[in-house]
Image (cartoon, rainbow, N blue to C red; front, side, top):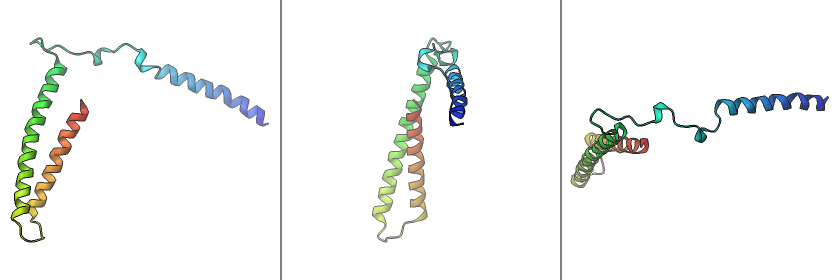
Length: 110
């Protein structure tokens, strides 16, 4: 009985493996389709390069804002003589965190 079950399962597993290979196959062996090719803009520049340049400019702008917020946070912390933080100081830490995540996600996207 066990042998019969094993013999019945083997063709099913082989068929599933064959379907998986037929569907996904080797992605690296396939030539890139049209969606992966670079598009040239009317100006003659690469669309991908232009997108990367715009993201770089955004990262630089956000990094400058991040530095400004960090300096403001440092000043707020230094001028407080108490151990209690103000609500605006906590909001600055949230803004710093959001900016840092935004920059990181943009950089990981590339």
